[in-house]
Image (cartoon, rainbow, N blue to C red; front, top):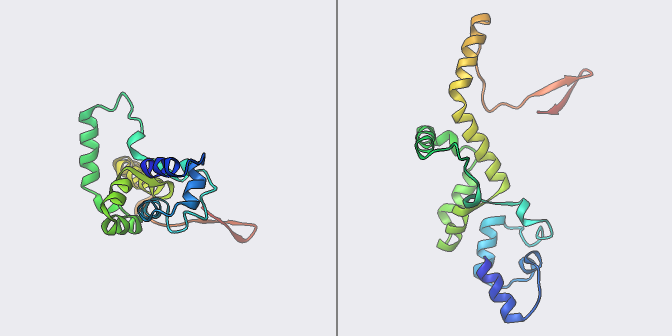
Amino acid sequence: MQEYFEAYKARTKRAISPQEWIRVTQSKRAQSLLTGLLGKDYARKAATALSRRVVNIMEIPRSPAMTQEIAKELLGRLGKHQAQVLERMDSFLAELRTAEDPVKQALLRKMGTGYFNILKGNIGEVLSRERQLAILADIAKKTPGAKIYRGMKVQLMSGGKLGQEL
């Protein structure tokens, strides 16, 4: 993206912000990358800060306590539950499968915050499964037949009416 942006500035000799460039670029390759990263309506929403909409996966810091051995063990656990890790990521995966190579490379490095948050939640669910089962075992001692229900939305009653979805 940066290369397309810099080429535009050099060609037009204009001082332009990245957000403005996104709205005015005519480069089909840049538009294809932008659509892959930000969605079909990227030009209309370009006024919003891109940094809030796209996460550079390559820049996520790793804790010093996260050794290579720990990372391998966690990735192994995630690999055993790949379907759950990728739940609700269907449209992202479809874009990835059908994208041209430059878009595919960008999608593998940067992802929209919505997809990123889904992925974080899915990973948290998988990695916390053992702890969830331990807590369930404690609860089941007092309440036989207790179960964990996944993928459910909850609405609490408030004043005799259904409240906001949690």
